[in-house]
Length: 500
Image (cartoon, rainbow, N blue to C red):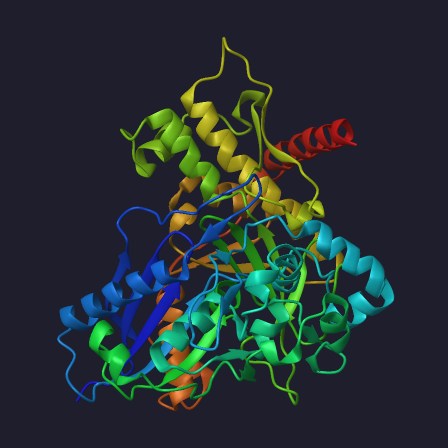
């Protein structure tokens, strides 16, 4: 009998399911729903919301598809892992009904609330204890609901992250994880528990927070009701959960100090692991509990995030291609432009408040446009160089914190499919880039195998993980890409001066 694991990845663009054979470490079948990107509603400028029931709708479709495609038999599915978009806020009443749309990761409405809390709590508490400013994270979003929607707040039974909500729909159990509490800025790293000071400052009742369980653990079992609508056999345990960035790092076997992972989907990230609680004094990058953290062996993840990444590339495709050009054609066209795009520069910060910009409104900007010289190829290359420059800006903050950034791992997907993007990333940051055949859903399945005990060690979970390509930098290109970054940074500084 086969031993199978199901990984579910709840993104803001799509829901993906992956079925992994635990004995070979290979994915059998994977599928994302819907075909087009899921809608993000923006009732006001800077707001971003999604209906949690929409995620559940596509979880049901994706699960049924992969289980049916693989002809899964009774007893073959051993565990379920859940990865999810970080920092989202889901509210339910005592009957587990959703009270309002989820305020998701790229929503900016709570920036002011986080800034006030940082002043009230003080830097001397926030940085050593929270490793972050309260910022625009889940706790601040919850405080916004308390202040602005008291009728909703009066009905709250529990608050959850997106992955906690899907686990609840599968099992009926309302739980979270330590890494989840830390990403919401509810976690006191010195006390190794929930921050009473944050709860008191925000007037958040402790009972609203779910019980925290380890990322690898039995976290409830699929109910008969959920089985009927998902096709998942009743009784199968949910045995892993993590936010998308800790999970992406896990999916690439980034678990030890000094190891790094990167993604470039709707947002772009670099995530580095350390065993001491590092923090940036300006909270431009953020530290959370990593998936393999224990009191005996602490593990932390330092996250650099740029919201305006793949979304800018997607915007270029829609605006310039009018639906008649695909990403491969765009990359081929952009490759015809020279390094530096003949002086055309893109500042990509057009998708909500950017933490590396201290949540200040920068926006997206196209600079240096020459109507007699620049065309589509320059626009495409400038966008990708601008995205990598923004990641490099954060990368250098991480280096200043003392992190040793030499080799970075990524899944060969999204913007890492672009030769322009890969070459720019490697040379601008002077790093070795390893590209793997994996994704968040596959990583969640591997995590489920650890949680349910199929894999006795983390190393065993990664048998079958395939390295597709290694890209090493060429010193010949260091200078031209450093010039691109220096020009980009200078343009950014000019924009910031104008906004003061």
